[in-house]
Amino acid sequence: MTATRVLVLNSGSSSVKYQLLDMRDSSRLAMGLVERIGEESSRLKHTPLTDGGASRERTGPIPDHDAALKAVAAELAADGLGLDSPELAAIGHRVVHGGQSFTHPTVVDDTVLAEIERLIPVAPLHNPANLTGIRTARALRPDLPQVAVFDTAFHTTMPESAARYAIDVETADAHRIRRYGFHGTSHAYVSRATAELLGRDPAEVNVIVLHLGNGASASAVEGGRCVDTSMGLTPLEGLVMGTRSGDVDPAVIFHLMRVGGMSTDEIDTLLNKKSGLIGLCGDNDMREIRRRVDEGDERAKLAFDIYIHRLKKYIGAYCAVLGRVDAVTFTAGVGENAAPVREAAVAGLEGLGLAVDDELNAVRSGEPRLISPAGARVAVAVVPTDEELEIATQTYALVAI
Ligand code: AMP
Image 1 (tube, rainbow, N blue to C red):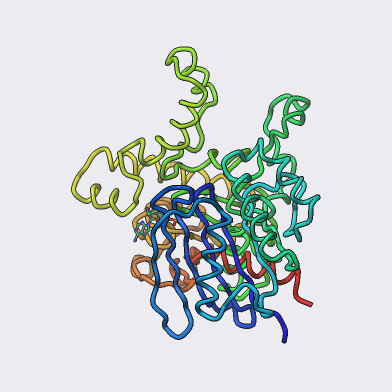
Image 2 (image 1 turned 45 degrees about the vertical axis):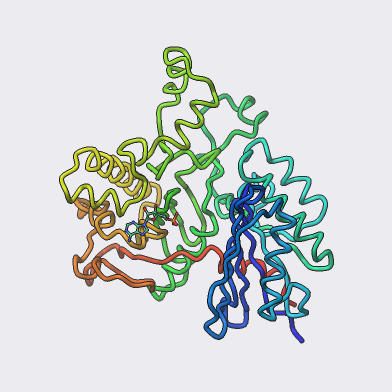
């Protein structure tokens, strides 16, 4: 029997998201989520996707990732999809930070684990949790290939001119300070899917991808290779996000320390958790913000306007970086669903060849689609992202014989 299944694991500090896919047709067999690991009120939600099975939920203490993965394995086994099945080809792990070392998905061995560990100082929130997920899965199925798929890998093609900050080179190198970029599996998947939507070879197409979810990032993709992206050393740089500020003058930090008397940790929390849309208007859900804007709420309107202004600046910047743009593609929760955001982001950019057709923009669909007027110089598209499928595809490509 050929092994064609891939389990995708996305391990956070207190959660594990998972999907089991069959790579013969990229179909999903099961998906689920374990939340609040380490608390009394842990929750596991498992959804079998074959034969219309109903979701199952259970709550109660799940003390650690090992217990979480064993609980997931038991749920899968109950559906006849156990991790001991010979049909399982590999486990694909999302790893947030691969630094400069990992430019491609990589089969995990002890050296790879050590290198992911070495990168913890540049990804203190994410890499430890990702490592725990890999180690736990490895202990459960030591014979199975475990593949690490890095959020940063797609951006390693950025030229030095885009990847380096203009700070002292020796200091930067000593601390591995450079622009790494994130959401790479999404940017890779969406830029390729955009070329497919246009019926063209990805190697010939230049795309600006706008990944607008709770976290948000833009990238400039030239012939399938990333040449610039808005996130930097960490996912804090760039666009206005749900709770993150995106770009600020770094002197804001010195000012808050010297004049505001704030500690490093307080400023970290301020910029990562209490800024962006939530800091500007108290809400980070774009649906709620739009509802408030429609009711005439001034703070919500200002938050929306700042969000759009930043987005426009990045679209313009990436038009300049790419020189020729074939498509601008919206993806992720806001990009896929919020027609007013797409309309406002492109409004007034006719000079760059950009426009949306109101009727096409209003269509709600889970399919990749064009929303620009027929014959437009630059295509404007909506492409639902699928990071799990991309991780599974990259994992399977590495292990399938
Ligand atoms: P993600 O991080 O990709 O899951 O995106 C989450 C964000 O998508 C939420 O914070 C919402 O603001 C946004 N979102 C989801 N559905 C809609 C919708 N129908 N309209 C506007 N925004 C939405």
